[in-house]
Image (cartoon, rainbow, N blue to C red; front, side, top):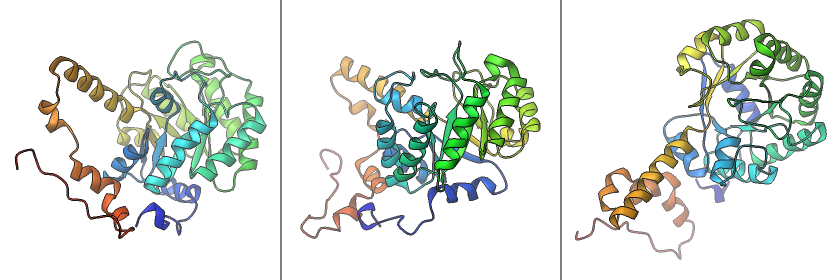
Length: 304
């Protein structure tokens, strides 16, 4: 069934579905999806939830991850991936786009866009990627107030409190903040950019409830598998920008090859075929909705 026919109309709210996934035994692996097609491919691979990364989305907009993306741009991608997949989405809400009232609006807008969770961090706006240097934090009390406001605004959305304090105030500071955010009503806590297994285990042992880990590439965190994060005490692991990075690397190769060779036949084996793409996006399901559209026949290779 296509989106135009109301696929997903009978599903529970995304936040409720995500809550059930988090509560299942084992760890929930959540890859990033920087657009609708990426989300559909992740769903085909068997993933049950997806992540919308602020860093990945801003990069696709040609912008840096410095808090310059608007909430409407974030909601556009959220709607796109939600519509394409019907999967619950964990969305990067940055700093909540302002203070408490702004965070409440972010919650409302993302719920309407189809999100299942939002994480809100304790950095000062403009923020930085959590794995970079010289981050600045708001006070623990102001951050907790923002989390409490987000909880008050939600209908079903899971509220994830992210703390960037480990690199600024040390691990003990991050633990203290996370416990304060839990008291404010956060459903999940998310310590970003921890640099070692010892830190991950200490944090998990010191903060009750579900915890989320970030396995980004080229950052402060060593490379761990989902199974290793589960053993450390984490309920969720995200791979936030991996799909965007792999796609960008492939496009760099493509454009260089086109420039140097004036054609792309040599790259055919690295491309998704038209037939496979149409299967992924449900092309024929849409086509059958309008009997006035002739059934498409996918061309064979030239010369066939």
